Image (cartoon, rainbow, N blue to C red; front, side, top):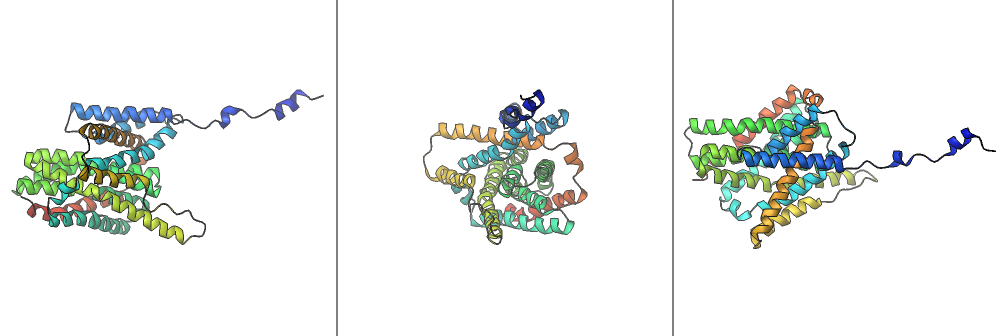
Length: 343
């Protein structure tokens, strides 16, 4: 006869322990944070929804204890939802607007991104910044801020602490630049439109560029945004180049899985830009896509901000801050010829 102890030993394991963690709690939290970012932007148009969402994520993440229930969903939001936002960003870009600036200005935009990344990487290496972190900082400061940081992290599978640190630096230095650059341009008596082009070529986030352009004046705002969107367009070739480099490294390691040459969300980004430039897309479609894109990016930034806890902030060293300072100055100097190329 089977004893009670035997029955206990041979009983099947609990199904609860085997149940995979659900992502819904974290996704709903990120969506709520993203919606709050959009609401903050609506109430105060000068505030970028991405910036509001990041700050809110930092506050919430430091006020509440880490939760195993929300962690899986927040991880999905910071990567997969972010890719949706980046992919739909292509529908906001019109190639003809960028080319209308002239080929000289286009070359400056390319120089800002390529030179900014290369120079920042060299600076980060000299300062001893870890490779993964310095790549994220270099791309964030040279292309389009937090969205670029998260997009690069998506193709390189970067560590969460590196992503959060790079995002924190982008927010801090970009917010300072959106106030400092207009002040410098005014003090030097720069042409308003040229100053707008310089701001668009130097400042990290699109929302920060909008604020700087608004401080300089209406004529500066339009050209600042177009120049900035030209830098955003460089996100696709940079991500493709990084993926190609990963494929080459993978080919040298027997049995390694080689990533696709062009990630799907990058391909959608490019197709969206082409469609927006050459197809008569209905305004309703563009409006809906714009809302979804803004919400997806804001939700992803909330999730990234949520990961930026006190421990992560305290891990930032003087070398990262020095790299961020140098990268900001370098990008601004490379973009300086823009002042003389538009009128």
